[in-house]
Amino acid sequence: MSVILSGGQTDAHEPPAGPPKPAHGLSESLALAAQVIGQVVEGASLNQTLRLVKARSTALRAAAQDLSYNTLRAWGRVDVIAARLLDKPLHDAALRGLLLAALAELLARPDSAHTVVYQAVEAAALLGQPRARGLVNAVLRSYQRQAVALNAQIDASETGRYAHPQWWINALKAAYPGQWQQVLDAANGHPPMTLRVNGRRITVAAYLIRLGEAGIVACSLGGGAVMLERPRPVATIPGFAAGEVSVQDAGAQHAAVLLDVHAGMAVLDACAAPGGKTGHILELADCALTAVDISQERVRRIKENLARLELIADLRVGDSLHPAGFASAGTQFDRILLDAPCTASGVVRRHPDIRWLRREADLSAFARTQARMLEALWPLLRRDGKLQYTTCSVFPVENAIQIKEFLGRHAEARQLPMADFADGQILPGADSDGFYYALLQKRG
Image (cartoon, rainbow, N blue to C red; front, side):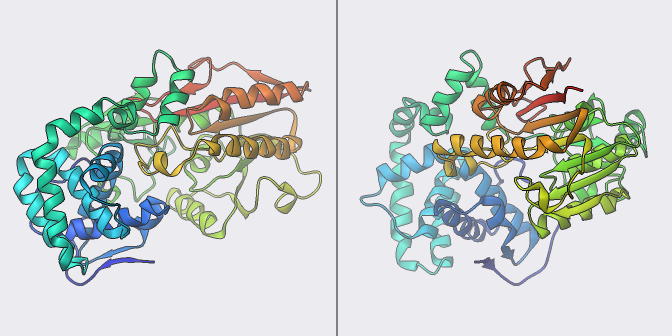
């Protein structure tokens, strides 16, 4: 179902970059965000829901997107607050979404409380629920009166303080006893915007000069990674349309480098959409690359990304659990990149709904799929070839434990050392999301 507030002019779009400032039309933004959040509350993906948003201007759409992201980052607090202030649960998803969005705004901008409450009340009418205006007003005013006590109660619980489910917190404590708080704090922050400089077109040094001339502050993170001081729309990034740079997290940029591809090699990029790693591999080496993903729509996104970079790959729709559907009998590759489906626990600051949509049982479910995928693709690797296993997860059951079990099943496999991160795990931080890498070689 599309989320709609229609009519009007269009303006420049800005990506999520923090709590939105007070602006004319906050009630419209809240109403639109309420519908988005309501669908997420009922189990929909935030990204998928936002793709369906239609608004009377791109500025309104961007504001609603900001509100949605910030509400889901604050979910662990605002959901508890709403539950304690309501006499009974709200069954209307959009109205519940409105209360959550307004409470998140009050948390982020307490000095603008009067405006937020007034605009939230007006938003109830925009949602077609004028009778709910009194309820919205009462709940938000009640929060203002009880804010100190309520926030203290929430801070007493780890779920409220760290805005993550307790099972998630417990899993991180067990895996990273000295770093779990750092991981959670990073997940609650705003993600950096990092570019990958296409070395075929321009050097990092030259590109940094070009950014400086455009008044864009940025720094090098090593390799081809350049991090912008402030996120900005891709349409305003110098050289993006011409394929000189791509948007890709610094942690994700290790994949193509670690794969160690050389000219002339046959390479398989499994689970390749949207094509960021595919493009990076082809920027680094002239190879025969086959990129596979499970849906036609996702393969179309790979094609669009490669077209911008003016690069070519053999694109195929296929399921990496069943390689016979895209690779003929006897086909083998020198290199395989398996960017395995996972909980995405390392990138939740970009997808704040994930932590609330995931369940603890998903860990073992993903691990089973990953193991099956490794077993399915391993026969396609030539002797002395290398398979890189990667996830955007921070949970060991999907990462180090997965690889240990695979090595236990395959005497012909060995794990190669990686100089930059010995255990393969990158934890989310100021300049990178969370990733895991393991490079496996098939003994000759």
